[in-house]
Length: 297
Length: 318
Image (cartoon, rainbow over all chains, first blue to last red; front, side):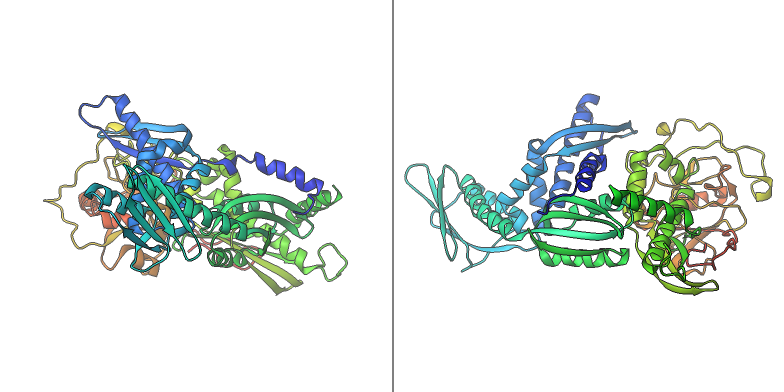
């Protein structure tokens, strides 16, 4: 990273102070009134729905591409049950009682780091829009419930069962109550054991995708430099745009410069899909008189 | 530090010296456009002798024109977009950012005075801009609860020259259910949209207009439409002619045509529809497909464009 000029440092501090960069997305829910539920219970239910909706919306925004319908449904189902883990705070914007429903608007703060980590370990961060073929080798029989659970986890992780594909996932009952599992790729094998097949699945695929994550991040740390604005306001808005682009993660504004030729800024980002970023930038920048360069970290 | 001062001086000089931009709204296409021209000084050593500097000044003036044009728009019957921007600094900052990233086209032109740089900035009245202007906390879409307005009784509704109907204190809207359309008695089957002819009235286009029946109960407005549809298409399209292609696309092949009988307030934003056709309009607006397309067009008479130092650009009202 180049040495920051004093002016850039001042601007960087100012940018961090911009409230817009920490702007929480408002979520609006309409909770139908139910017989037997007190107003407090209806409100609590509406809040739960708003949390689940906010966490799911954030998850979709963090994914590099739109997941398929089935994967999206399973992710929503899972996050609905685990939404509270990822909510760090909320602010009630408005609440109004309608004849048959309560309309509640909240600003929900979501722990993006934790959510991103989950999306990586379950595989969705890598398979959204690009399902991964794998072979399932069952060496011991599963109950119907266990089988259904694994099917759900596979769909959520964007994993498609394909005969003869790599990686292969092997599952068999070991000694005692433990299950043994392994994921084999062309170059490596990960093994693990756990008390039930679903836990084993999550642990093994988590380790598999953690490996993918570190190799991808190491290979794709980039610095994007954009110039051509006439006002610093343009930089803050582009920052929002960049965070919404599929195919990039960990977007961080490095510095902003006021030059005689205009305003320029640089971002560090993790590039997951170079083609997706390139397409969005080509669509966005030239028509606005902006130009960019993308370089290694 | 010197660099900052130089930039600030250049920015101020550019803003103060630039010619006023010609800005306008195309209510049929849903776009704001502003165009500015900046002469290039024949003396290449003069501050404005560099075409790039002139282009930058023109672009700044054009985007300033966009801002002013947006601020002048009516948001709804009660306030203008400028009122919202003045009240909410965070919103104003967000909108400034969007306009500073607005698409811009520019290039050299020849004027009577010589070489000049021209810049045209545009912004769509849809998508992110509307999303920022209409957060759920500010506008309740699809509440199903129509607004109520007390319309001044005894005033002739047809003649706009006699002045619009006056707004009265509206009763609390939350407890007033929407009147059910007498579906059995009134049929809107086969109609693909609603076209309100208000060319005989002094209509002021707005982002959130409301159509009322003569009793002062809302028939159409944000309370009926899904937020996503309004952000994508705006609640209603304004056009000068029923033959406009945009009207046909919006309202389909067989729109229900209704002639407005008056304005529902001094702002000129909200319209009153005749009692005889209100039931049919309500029946039509029970169709979710019509609502999801915001298939409503208001025919109006745009004001004559003001002639100025620049020839009318693409932003002239349509």
